[in-house]
Length: 374
Image (cartoon, rainbow, N blue to C red):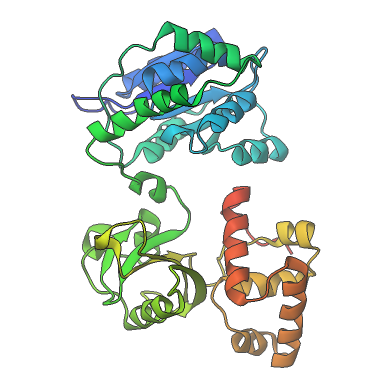
């Protein structure tokens, strides 16, 4: 089943690395029919050369291939550039088990598609990953000597010299320059967390699709408008608290839904230009009680008890200690004692450090939508 064709003009480049010739051909045909410029490779070495030759915006890569696997390939690419030169990387695999899924995520993969391929799911993932990006012009031919050096390095040869790596990075940078500006909005739209950038006056300067959905408000009508008074107060307090430039705090704030948990993770001042000064990045984990849970991870990594795990995730969702005590029907002293135990086991000393640790675990493990396991 093919997606609707894209309009005329420059097309997003996709690289498909797959050793099965039939599947490789089908993927190329379906994606080309959908309006993408598709390049193919039948192995990891050929895929490495094609990656730098065409500077794709997105890579579909098989995991199990003869010789060098997809895991090996992404690991090598990350040695050259930790951000994979800005390309989205999606694994194609028949390995649906959790360990392989986590391994791919930890190596930097953005998504997984399980074989046999469901093309409707494929098209939707590709659409989301490429959202907000502008296709760049074709790349000049890759120097054959550079291609040979890359393939030798993949086979445990010497690492490419820094000037060669800079040249390879430039192939992607020039593509971004040609597009006018590097647009991160497509990546933020793919997050299960709502993301907003708000100034001290409560005016929204950016909101991703998830934030718009959580607030039940079309994104186009949010930008440039003021938010709820309590969120304005929250942002102002956070600006004072994060005077050093970065900080984390959380509480429940009345937005469009009563008790919406809100986390301010960073003050956007340094490094973002004058236009971003005085603004705060605000995260909306979701409706009350739906903060992405970390129960299993917290138990396995830090040996937290069930009560301690629930307390940690409630703090992460913006609840204060008095609210937790009232909800559970216990004394404030009991909750404080449990929190002290959580701090000791997780190696943190403040609630803001606990929130930061939960967010780090959430993104690092790729378990953004895992529900609490009790």
